[in-house]
Image 1: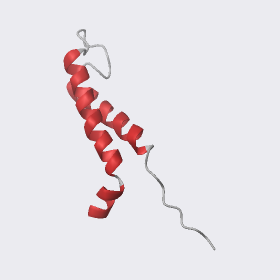
Image 2 (image 1 turned 45 degrees about the vertical axis):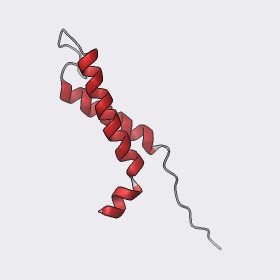
Image 3 (image 1 turned 180 degrees about the vertical axis):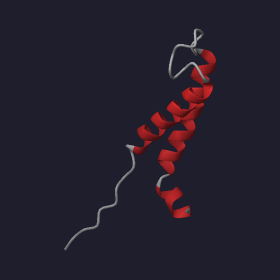
Image 4 (image 1 turned 60 degrees about the horizontal axis):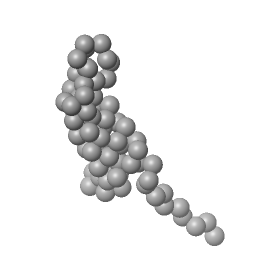
Length: 69
């Protein structure tokens, strides 16, 4: 488990930062009418922000390639 966390630390940091950003977006902007699918409820906005943050920062993970000789 610890090895998995260390291998995916960028993605996990992205999830946390994205979730915070999604919550802050809901709090500051939100959707007053309640018809917006993502921003009408705090948990939708937080989950979507976490997903997008994780995907964004996981793109920067360096892959380890073994040299085949």
